[in-house]
Image (cartoon, rainbow, N blue to C red; front, side):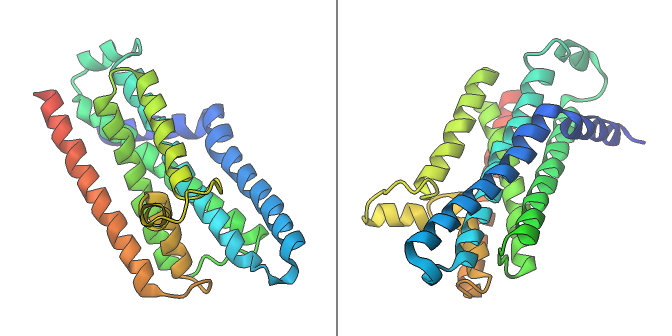
Length: 254
């Protein structure tokens, strides 16, 4: 087994065996999905009766949490970068190792990415089995999950390139995640009816783009051209983030 495979296996086992990861990034999103679906769907049915499209509401909630926690899980990569390569006691051993640091970084990134994919697939499966979630076109769902999972790792890597300390990186990451949910209208906080507010809720964040891609690819809204447009924008943002991360990485090395 090669060096990269050993490093990837090490970090992946750490990710799936750490109790805090299972609690905060697996059980918590699943619990929030269930509570929000039961609470919001029940509330809307009490208010409007049979006029409520419970399938559409369930899809919005499940898609929102699936995408949001992809970015929250980026904290796992931030932890590995700072704890192993910058601030933790093991960093001196890794610096003395003949294995380049970029190999450790790539192994940790791939392991965190795989963890994110499994987390997203689990949310998708539970929502489909327990609630009446209409995920729509499976290829669109897979594309969204792949792009968002890669984007979340790039965002975490970008924050790690810029933040001097882990606590700073964690703070920025949490502000980004909660701010994205707020601007996307996921907290049901009214942002007004201005053109800017409408843009933010529809196309202004990765959460809104991914949610719309899933919704428009399914029977809820059924507009594949709109779904593909949102996927294209997500892919473009991911490409820009990749360029920024690699550029900053070269500059930091220099």
